[in-house]
Picture 1 (cartoon, rainbow, N blue to C red):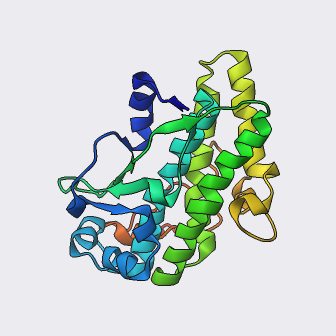
Picture 2: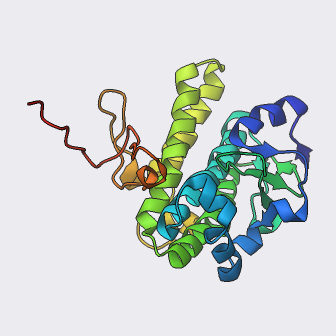
Length: 252
């Protein structure tokens, strides 16, 4: 088994990797996060409600998913850029909270940071990394939040998709890697978004990310769903990608 280097871990902190284990009071395990009673505690947390400026469970559920979606960016960045597969099982990670963080941006701590690497077939290895991330983790989180917060799974999946698109497109726009690495990153992106079969996501039907991947207009990819962020804003500000068009007041 291989490991992430110090430099690699430093880069992955951008995607909220935590290398220090927090106290029990400041963390929740992945396994606990899918349990109704633990998830309800998060939804009803006065501290989180204060930081998010809302007590609406649907809104809080959506914001939890937007933060949790960084796990996909973290794991897939390591897979595509470093050719290393992080163990993203619910049993191996914890969501850690910094009590002094004014806007509640939790990080991810992995009990075991040993990683897998491609051996004979990279395509087969990639499929196992993607399946572990989605089928064994994110799909379960989406289902749990949808159930407890009574919010559409479509919103939660798009919350995940937007960060995944952002991560891959940012890397490709940077263009700082060698051609072979860039080709691999581009191929991984296309696989995850358009080619990965639904069973890797633990779902029937279609890939849950594909429907949200459409061309940008004026460098903005409008969402298909509203993430409800505006309900946390004191000024009701909407995201630039919000699909809801606000009518501007007419000048008299």
